Image (cartoon, rainbow, N blue to C red; front, side, top):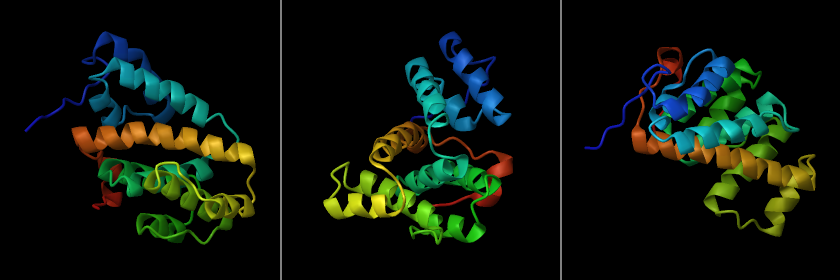
Length: 182
């Protein structure tokens, strides 16, 4: 069985160290998934660049976390579900809405539901949205530009979700309470 190391900043390839430092500054830790990703500086640096763009866009952090959690569930990435469950709760998404997303259901909050449904459909339909899918998102109170911003969030989470499914990093102790399996 192929295994991947979970690097620390000190043990990572030199070209991955700056990206890991940025992630540590953002989260207070180097997430294990980033430590595993550090095997490829190209991937690690790509994620950090996209991460900065996503978190500097027009969505608030709760909305971003709703998309990221939906993507983690849709892509069946256990590590990312645990991590984004913790961040969703920390950023004010209700426990009921978090549990709905983890159960592949729509949250009660209308805006979060529109974002979650769009994210899930983008992944499941590989970007081939119907007019009805797009109208549902617009009816949720979003504009045309938001569609493409969600694509960026989905791209960022695809990097982590696929990496998590390939490398299978351990879930950090603070996130164990949110463990999840597909």
